[in-house]
Length: 170
Length: 438
Image (tube, rainbow over all chains, first blue to last red; front, top):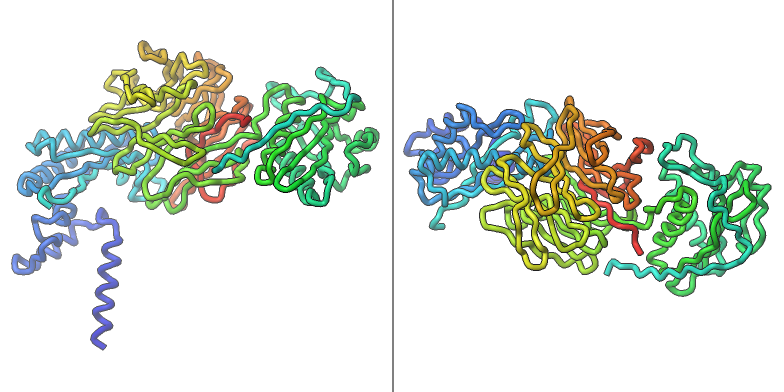
């Protein structure tokens, strides 16, 4: 019966893979960090050079106020962390995705998402990241991560997400 | 592959018809019809065995077209006193008056192989006479619904004095799945939701298809490359190609000029979104707006001389009109709230738009100088109006609230009456109503 636990572990991993990475909080990172240097699994969230670390420990997204594309102090702090990481991990490029909540027309939200993505891009460039490593795309209101029609969800959907696009050498 | 060739033979038959063009049988649409006109539409008489089933099918579609306008009310067949069993026999007007049928449509159908032939007459019951001449339409059995729509268009046109809109198609985005995993693909359908045909897969997000004036081509936005780009699709062959675009930009919200040669669209470069025009054949493009604001959702006037669009240059999204070649824009919307997706009516006199105010969305119309604004709908999220070919009806998408929110197509008269869902196999959004077919 040794097969059974292995199957169960596989099942858990696949569920985790399906979960929106954006929902991982800092708690996960903290608990993983307890493994220490000897416990670092390359590519996992406790490998500081991994995209998973970038996503979860550095923070891959910044949020915006209603109809705004101005960066908040929290947003700038997150982007400063992203810039440091990108400078240290120079092999990676990134696509910055701009998103809007559903309270707006499709076309306007596409343009608003472009503004948000560009605000994040411009700030990263101001922090020394090479402009050529960054691309922007707007999804408007097409790809919400939260589905309720309330401000609690809208606040999380109004975002710019820095998605690492593989290593430059890969 | 999708063009069901409809051979239209318009034959005048019978000489008894006295045309009563200004007779009592008349609906003035502009007045806003409150009491629909009672109409009897008996099953068309099958003139051979092959046509047996077709008589009833045709009459049901004709009736659905007319009743669907809200201007007509069908009298149920079980109220009929006389039956129409011989198309050539004189109509017993007294029997139809007795059930208060003001209009009566009689017809006959013949099916030979894959050919359907329909003849029909429209009767002005209370004038004891026909309204207009008898007509005959012929087409293929596959395209039988188009023949019914043609008949209904004639009836509508003779009674209202307006061009009909039933023999027309709508291209739209067919949607499945929850909000955070929505899958979208382009589809084209008859105006009433029948004969849906899918034009793309749902691997990449597709948005806002727009018919050319002749209905042969569709512009749309796709994320096929990972970035929004504009594509043009030939509806007949379903062949598509991407339009020219600069590296590092995003393009979306395309619409054809009336001539079908020029495309206006939005181009995002960095934080700024402007309106551009492109010659679809040469790929030559020209920038039409140059403010740092968001400029999007351009739509041509029917004569091609002007463009109405949306801009937040004043601080909130409002509607503006500029010359087709660019230049000074005049703001036309001044009400409270945010205005978007303006669409010029085919008659040229009105602009339909989406309006967001106090947490609700509306579809509305205003005159081209911004006066006489009228909101036609209200809901959690209504957007994306498109005009019927005769400028009397607007189709749009309504998304419901919450986690289980779903988008459905609706239509509404420009009077604000007759709001009704358009039944599609899946969810629907971003409709674009094509021309009346030939």
